[in-house]
Image (cartoon, rainbow, N blue to C red; front, side, top):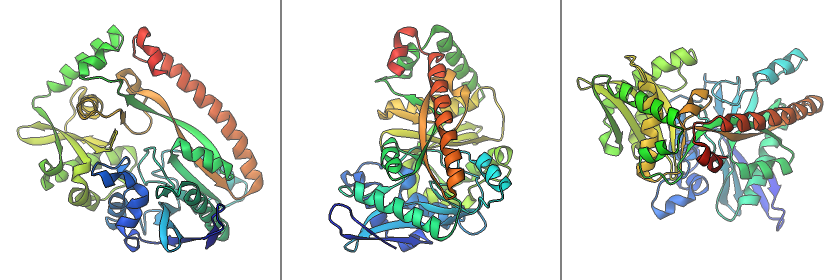
Length: 401
């Protein structure tokens, strides 16, 4: 399909691909993470070619998963200038911005909600750019990708297109092109220039500070040691143990784990420098673990699991060890995944997240638009209330609002 660059009328070609292996890693990453040219880490490890390819080649997405790749690329004068991780979806699992009610309403009215199109990182509720563009092609590339995705949706007569966990800048450009904005919220920890964990604790109310210290003592008394591994310190056998942890959590939370064992093998081969693996070791064997991915300025907590249950160990491995690591690395944020009001008492504050939506049926689109206006007001109020009841001392609370 073709489009036009509004600035100079140059033809932009948009293509859909059923495999990321058909797109050169250098071309994709020139759009997804151009900042790595300075030798540093990507801002967002989840939109890199290696992460998305690991999902595909491991069978975590593809036939039988309900996530069918349709990666979009935009080309100008033969050069790839923009890309987007687009998938055809036959369900709404693994998205974390939920549209189950929309699907029920659509189908109760006699429509067919699935398949739909989704621009997202599968199974990964992490905010980041979804319209990936080479520097200098931001407006042109985003416009081409949005127009291309909507055209594919219309030509294939699917119900809708969804862009989940996009960044705030994309909200403005997306809504200007007719997409509807939806607000949600997560809990993120923000580094206010802390040099140590005790500096962070000092910013909390006395009661919360005492609670966290007690939880850390309780967790660390489980009868072993806690280690944090990255890069070549992570051994292949560590993933055997973590796979057990992940399966335990996945079976309890989702019924069937989303990721395959081969995904973690691929991560070890191509991304272990992007990983922080926190393990609780007892008698030389891991009994619990938390998997984090390392961004340039953010530490992303993703998965946790255990084969033995010990009081407060979940809080220690997932939240406090992540804060320790972010402070040591000079990172400004920890994103600990979706949901979980229990994170509030541990210093993780409510933060707005964003998605964009296009609905084919005009009447249903009008209803959704009205719903989103009311929902956004409720989300804003909830964030305000929860922040006010956060764990920080009154004299530091305003810094976090």
